[in-house]
Image (cartoon, rainbow, N blue to C red; front, top):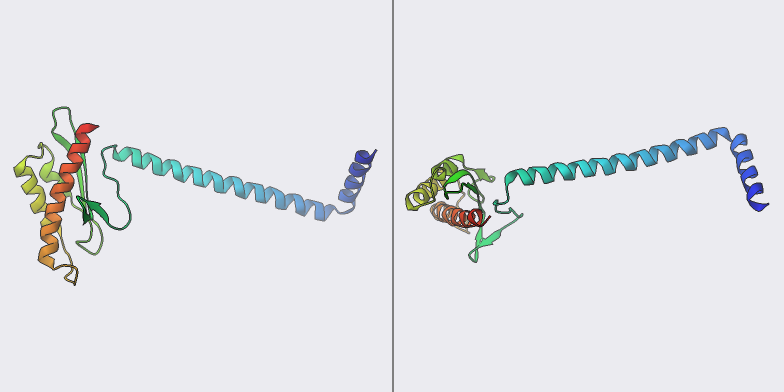
Length: 169
């Protein structure tokens, strides 16, 4: 009889306090709706980011915040390559960091290696295009000339690493 009595008292209380009961239900409905909306937005954003990453390809060198290291030296140079069955580069992206006010995407450097097998002349063209795109500052960590030279060398090294990864995929 205890459960029946409890239910009867609950319904009597709801009938006696209709406004309070209605506002409580409205609060619960809004709260549940907000949680559902936030979860849906988070899931949608996660899927969108995953799709963008998948579209970049499996042979993309991963970009981490801050400095990364290539061959034991700090590097802010990234190269992504797509290679066909014959080993010829069909698509490329080259990004340089720490050589301008913000990270530079250098399409000229990418064009310098597309259609090649990254032979020595293509590497030289890549290095020259990367160096031409640099607009570094001169400070205690390195002169403008040094940063420009290093950017070209690191672009060459990053391209060779990306080519090796692209061929192994």
